[in-house]
Length: 297
Image 1 (cartoon, rainbow, N blue to C red):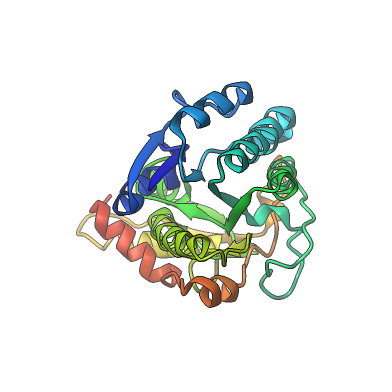
Image 2: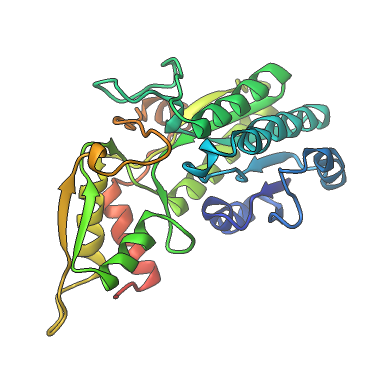
């Protein structure tokens, strides 16, 4: 089996290189090799690779900047995804694509399910929804994996931002009224590999059905709770070293260009029932991530 990864230099894409390798030949393309801002190049790239599975981990992810660059965000997250889906359909391949909690308004009292109606409140959310619609309309066989609050030991993310700020400041002010499940990119990649293997067997037996599946860590917290855990796990007490004070604040006290959902919790039942996949709880995964990178800053 041949698998094509786009966005191979991103948080999930980097982990996919390792997790997908036992399944077959992996073609990992970073932005230099496969740039979704140039959708006209994608048909040639995909046809030359001739993959059995395309795992699209490439995306425009600058949430606040997307408010000024919605056309570019929509080209990358929407139009380019549609081209990938169409070429995947022509090859008779499977498309695995990553989705986001930002397609929801975030006012629901309980976790969002795969059947809840999307209502994005930001340009980024609208651009991601455009990609989902393009996949659904083209007729390709697909799995859309919706996740949230992604972090990793490498790259730009909340974990590394908090560790940097902890070195620079005595006090951190962190939003405490937005809830979600911090999800380690390695856990997402491992789940993707397991799902891809199961999906291949389903397709071989003509029992495959396309769909959307939530793939997030178990449990929930706020950004404030996440920051507290990062400091607790990554900065053990040492003589002469001060720990920054973490102050909870409201979203109104930390205005951003793009509105964020207050509730980013996602129900995980469907992916467990279909594929037998269950990610670690977010605290255990965070500990494992920090241990894997030997953080001590």
